[in-house]
Length: 389
Image (cartoon, rainbow, N blue to C red; front, side, top):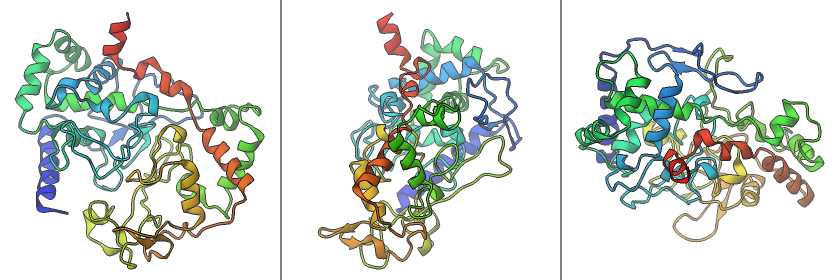
């Protein structure tokens, strides 16, 4: 990690601590909020920090802030610029591009069911709270996302001078004498993001709703392949959120995992591209080289391209990668045989798959598509809603 990037991360972490002063000293979390999550009985409720309880006014404020372009240095960029609802809150790009058009090293992750994520980024095990994570896109410099570092006073002035925000902050934070502050801004964003719950795919109706016809026979065969010891997919993409990093009210402890999938092996000794070394960037441990979080597979048909750097274009190619037990890149600066990466996960060992079985597996993955999620008006751009009224 470069010194400048480390300094930026340190500054954001210190800033997040500063914002917490005088609020609540409680560090435990609770899922006993009276907020109506509007989720089926089989889905456990998310865990909510005790210093940021849910209420509908806070969620609606967070929705407005999520789509607020004035929170960027150009006035034309928002959180939603990298997280489009129609793409399950991804952006369809290989890597994210910030407000200043700077390309990022990573692909934009889906926000579907982010409330159930105990870690929030591709490869930072220290980023565990949505309220703190929001500071990174707002004020981070390496790379620039929103580009608002040093403009904190401008943000607060904009919010106070706006025709709607003063009342919205007052309604959301009823006990605060001066509710418009950066801490409450990030709390509102986090509250909205926790409501982005996807639980109504055809597979959900089949597996949890007892609708035996909700998915095709091919998808049912694909489910068996997915959960087989031959393919091993379920080890990293299991459970209610199809990932092995998860937390919710019914778990006694958080489950957190990062994996090297053999995507690269540049020098034959396990190296990954310098700007994408995974957890190694945080820990400097050789065995953490190339380890990234397994993202949720919910709505995977919407979230191409794939992998942490968007370097695989289609689901078919993703299956090919795992079938080979790691990717081989024959030429160029990233050339290497990923299947021989010494730090590769034990679950990435390769497998045999016929073409018909591959199509069955794809049918299963496509059955995880939740059309209601990407069309839910509660998650949509409120400014566009007003234009159509």
